[in-house]
Length: 580
Image (cartoon, rainbow, N blue to C red; front, side, top):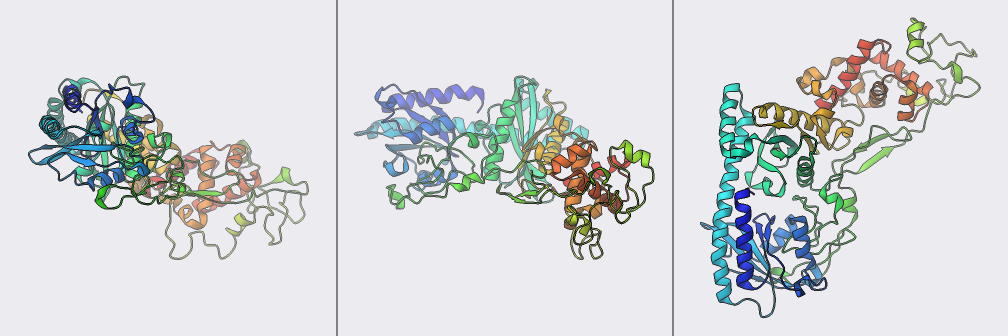
């Protein structure tokens, strides 16, 4: 909402409240709160009389899509005059509503809501109030046009192919923003976004500090949202992170860790649908339903009369699985953790392996094959040099039933005949294990470095979109990643996907070797420190050495060589990006 209109809305809502003798609230057509009148009556402030739905609408400043659909069922989108909605106690609507549609040139732009008491306002009072709503409609229409202009100018800046085109677009955007253009800004990218329809784009009003917003292509067939956000300080990114949480919640249809929905009770509607809908709003709006403490829903409507009949209760566990997993690769037992797009986490337990017995712990090798060459390098790396094992020698690992190293039989089987180093026939390579912890297509957000003015807006957008890609590829960075915190992805995101994913890791990306890919990445993330890597993976150090030897055979790299380590590390990270 533009600052020049904010006071106007409040004054007009107060004027309606005085005309009708009841406090009013103004919402836009998406049921997002714009302004509300003051409560002058002590009775209105009595907790036993105050409508909980109205309270939550004011506190959360928005309503769910299901709440919107329920009230639109009373014909408010088509009405040209006041619409009375009866109370529905079973749905938490303790007091009736009067809805005054806000129109301009035949288009509905919002609604004024009042609590309906007996006897309520007269027809003459309501007629006078409708004249005020016409003035509100003109302001909302003007604001909508201004927002559309800003969206167009922002899109022109971010999609410009040449410097001179971008300079011209920035000049247009600077003119449209006026004095606000010279302030401190950051750019937010949320991708993927579920729709390209401008009418489905979120309202800038619901995000504090948001200046302009537009949708843009993302990849071959998806969309993303770009938001220009004002900041008061480069060190305080709260407006940007709040906007990111709301957009991610709406894009994913569920709560985001640390976001508004994660801190509030799930909203429910008279239809019995949970508040975690495609709008992702928490709580309920001026015409919504009560909030169920258990996360379930109660109450349903019977036709357009608005009276409640029945109380179908939704499964509260639905919200428990709404957030995406952000866990580090692996689990305490060394298992492979994966997450679906709905946030449900599954874990395949892999008991810690490589445990030696019979006094052989001091002589574990990095695999049971090959003579040790370059022993000094092996010792420098902190891993025992490998020797030629002999039967019964102290340097050989204990043998299990299958004749392989006991405690590492699963890893040994990967090297036995019949286990192809290039994966099963017809099996396509995938990303490193854990690379899709939030699920394929799950939204992520990226934030650019704050800047003053608009001159570097194109660079800021590149940073924000790169950070969003990194957050999608690396779970520990997301769901909201800052450009300054994405590490090597700052370089990798600048490369074409086919270049970032080096062929050296191709063999590791087949599902049959996903545990080896994960082992390699964790080992390199731990700077080659075997103890840390083994603890992170939940395996014995001897098992780690065996896996590393398998990795060297599959890739042809020497993990005692710094450049080979760097290549493998970056290639594994690049493979994550290639999956986005």
